[in-house]
Length: 343
Image (cartoon, rainbow, N blue to C red; front, side, top):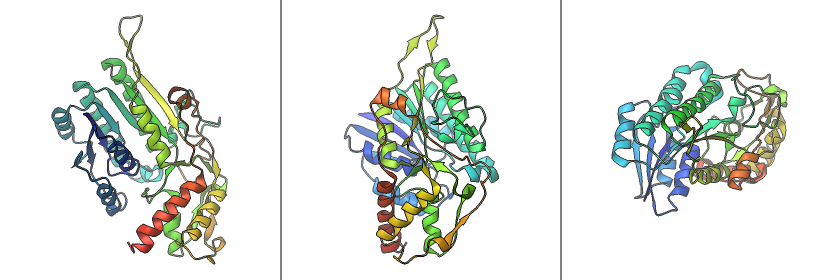
């Protein structure tokens, strides 16, 4: 039986990953999450209910708690570690930097130290498209220089990649970083644009579209992200010895994105159509009266666009869910969970 640690397991991507991992009856999943109130905790609890299983053991705890991390590694001797726990959000990092240092830096360091002292087959961890900062060259390639982050969140994710590389080199830990591009879908994070817009429109509030609508995002549906993670998990980077007799770092980084950036105004149009279709909003809703074009926000970038040729070459995989298909699934879920369920 494969023993797999999934951190941040009450989170958006993690919950979908746990659900898929449980389909294999040879997997024992250990989940860790601190259930912090960055957004609605009841949504995190709902994800945990949907993934309840006798082969899924959940611990409420913090990644920054080093003794807890080592205790879990001692007890379960994990084969694979998937570190998806992090303090997310670009804008929140501007006003609450402590949360990012604790979770994304100290927490990730604790995971690396545990992998050092309790060797694992593969460490897979979440990075982010935000590491590309204000890079002008598109699509973004993992070969691009990413030394100029424009937010603390991006800086912590780049730091994760650097720390993982050092630990891979020094301790021969197979590690793979995954740069996610604007992940969305049912049960997602309420601080993401599609979710936040929906919440505001229902209340009759105005939604703000940054950079006067001149932004493009490579929206990636959550199922496509999870499929990519699953494929990567099964194939750790190969351990090799260099000419100096020391290990070459078994280290890789991949983009996972839809490779099809969408203009924010088009995105809002599709979202509005799907919200009406799902009966989240009435057919005569006046969207134009609830839209406001505003300047770019600190920490934001004008475009994200993933080059996934490496992922396609090494794993024969490329995300494929269209934005309309993904937003339709989100709108239908939103109706069932919030409107019909009156939550």
